[in-house]
Image (cartoon, rainbow, N blue to C red; front, side, top):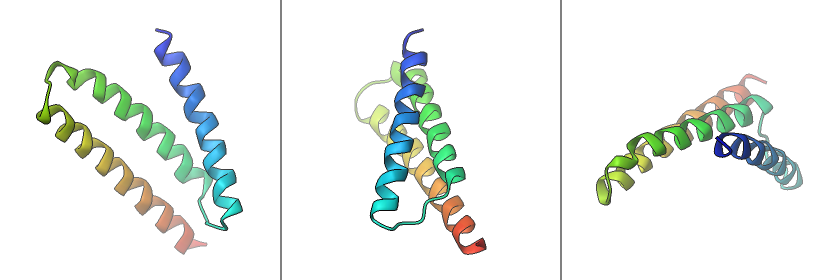
Length: 85
């Protein structure tokens, strides 16, 4: 139970840190994209717990696929939002 209280807090702090780092390096990242990133990160945590019954290479390939898809979706959303501006 404590896991589900600590992880969102860490994600929010990380989101603020990433946003500040992006401003420093003059990279455009929208807040909506960052919120989707946090949501997908939490989803990836839940999926990692659910698929943890399998071990070895299969587990890591499934986890890599989830993370890759989440990153691609967030990147596409950010690109769409920045082009739309």
